[in-house]
Image 1: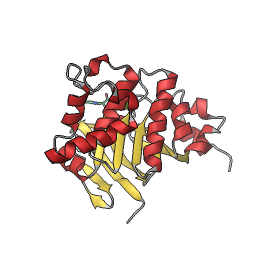
Image 2: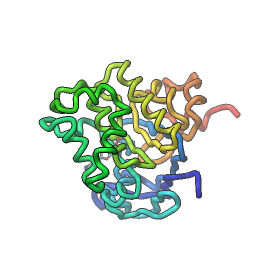
Image 3: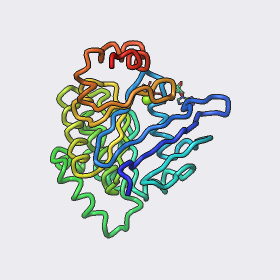
Image 4: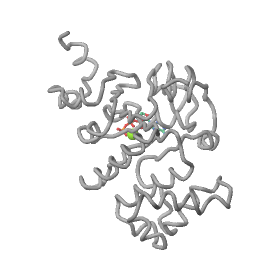
Length: 249
Ligand SMILES: Nc1ncnc2c1ncn2[C@@H]1O[C@H](COP(=O)(O)OP(=O)(O)OP(=O)(O)O)[C@@H](O)[C@H]1O
Ligand SMILES: [Mg+2]
């Protein structure tokens, strides 16, 4: 089986027929790696995740999961196939308990299997375990993000899509969330992450893809990009393509 678990080949997508956001976008994410998707605001990073998860249907090109075309497949099908999506922002039911939020994440599982799956997830998150009866809204921002990831893990996804997990978190909690994602990747899960907190995210990622105006502008090992003296310049004004093209051999 291919190592490229996720592939976009010349994908064209947008929110209306006259508004093209992804403009023949070609990229991939590999098994057991954290692939970091970065780029200026409005570049189309979230749109890549939404297209992958079936929220947007591509107008052209091909989206593949483990080598199979998934264009036009519905999110619930993709979830059942092993792709989970943690969108940007808060996605919990704030007035429901932590446990109830977890149960809703496992609603497609056989009922008898749910308690063991929840237990499996809670083992990863001791702080969440202590709070299962509390309202989700009473968790700290970092704990809420952990709960969202935990809820996504209930279905044991092979691919985790996550959009800006560090927003609103203290540096310490960002570290916790990134460490969690690193652990998942090391255990074989493919992680595709959008993150504005570039310098921190690069420390945990394997590869960095820079998206500009709906196209891949740069594809580099994360460690290499992190050590690049041009890194600051790359992310101040979206000059990735030009800087890269002008790099000495
Ligand atoms: N639901 C929508 N309807 C119409 N246009 C949208 C919608 N969502 C996003 N867009 C537009 O698509 C473009 C790309 O948006 P997208 O959310 O993918 O960018 P992004 O790279 O994730 O940016 P950010 O870093 O700000 O999150 C933007 O111009 C945005 O205004
Ligand atoms: Mg976004």
